[in-house]
Each structure stands twice: as C-alpha cells, then as structure tokens.
Length: 276
Ligand code: UTP
Image 1 (cartoon, rainbow, N blue to C red):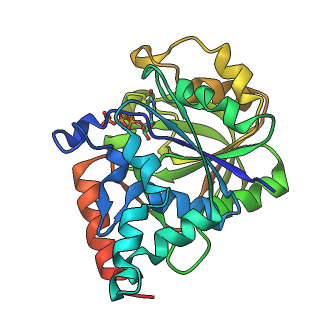
Image 2 (image 1 turned 60 degrees about the vertical axis):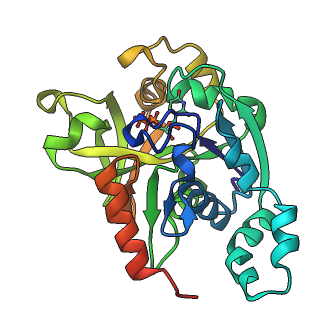
C-alpha cells in the first residue's frame, strides 16, 4: 500500500503571467476548485492520504488552502453557503499535509529530492497538479497506477500518445510491450526534437517512484536547461528494467498551458459542475 504522495508545486508558472505573479499556478481554479485540490483528491482516492507539498516562495496560499479558515467557517456556519465548503472540508479531514521548501528552482528532479525528508524509505506517488487527470466513470489515474505497483513493485510513469508536432514538450519513453497499454521502458529522453523522439509516448504528471530514486537523483548532474531532470534519473532505473510506462484510462488536460486550461474548464463545467 502506498500511503504518501509528493506534490512539486514550486514552479514559477511563467506561462500564466501575470496571473501567477503573486498567486501560485496551482491555485488557479478549474471552475470553482483549485488545480492542486483536484490532484490531492486523486491521491486520497488512491489511498495516499499523506500529501507532501514541495513549495517555494510565494506559495503560502497552497498551505492555507489545506488548513481550516477559522474566520470564514465561523462567518458562514449554519448558512446555506456551508455547502460550498463540504469538498475541501472532507479533503482536510482525510489528508495529512506536510510541506518543505525547494530553495532554488533547479528542476523537477531537484524538487523531488527536496521532498525526501517528507517521504523517507518507501514508494510514493507524484502528482504534477498542472496536469489535470479525470476518469469520470472509473478509478482515478493514481489509483490505477497504485494497483499496478502492487503487481510489479517498480517505478511507473503515466504516458499518453501525443502528436509528433508536440513531442518536444515532453519526456518520451521507448521499450517493450509488457501487455497492451503497458511498456517496460528501456529508454527515456527529455524533450527530444521530433526527429530524435524514440516514440510518441509522452510522460505526463503522474508517477509512482521507488525510494532508490533519491540516491539516483543525488548523483544526476544537471541536464537539459541546466535543470536536474527526473527523466535522467528514471533512465538509470529504466536501464535496469525497473520502470513501466502505463497508458491510463481517462483524460488529461495540460493546465499549465492556456489552451489546456480553457479546455479543462469547459469539460469540468459541462461534466462535473453542479452534480453531486
Ligand atoms: P513546469 O515545467 O510546468 O514549470 O514544471 P513551471 O515553472 O511550473 O511553469 P512554466 O513552464 O514556467 O509556465 C512542472 C512541474 O514541476 C514543478 C512545477 O511546479 C510543476 O508542477 N517544479 C518544476 C518544481 O516544483 N520545481 C522546479 O524547480 C521545477
């Protein structure tokens, strides 16, 4: 059973400036719920109730969101408006929230290493909450991956097929089919030009990682863009046959980009808003 999930939420969110100048990107709402809450709900559904947030400067709103707002609670107690707080109250009750700061934005690999004191020596989930994953009629993506972990006991990355024109925005995997929708990864490349991409299978923001990843990241030199890349560390595990790429059931919206954010907003409004 995987009980912990790491949320790297330290990024600057430059693609959403000026909205993200003083507000964390992860607090942008899809309809009436901030992105990070969708991710936390997905983790809790998967049994990962210990949510470890890797934050940075200017991200206090995220910590406050997962805490009681006493004045607000007091103000609306007993009124019909209490209904609006039900969802987040459930999340606060079920989840345990811990935080650590990433002191410098040195990349996703570095953000994950910064979370090591909150995770320790156990397998853990990772959610990049700007990727919104929804599976309306079945288990969430992290739940699907947790079930796979029970079977295979190795790192798992969620992947989806993307058009080759967009492949240079992603980590890309290649390997051998384990069974339909599941690939035993042998190669991982971060943001390759289209001509060098080993496949059209792009890694999205859901992972299950085994704890040896921390030592591997420690030994990983900065890669593309001078950042410590998680993809480079995963390549070490992949070379030993210890990474699976999973084509999940459900939809994923790239809410770190404006078009993906707008698409997600429309989808959630039409399919979830106002429903019990
Ligand atoms: P992105 O590549 O989306 O970067 O990071 P960003 O800064 O958030 O957004 P843009 O590109 O400037 O618009 C992917 C994820 O990794 C986290 C981000 O918070 C995001 O969830 N991250 C990235 C960190 O926590 N620390 C880092 O040093 C880099």
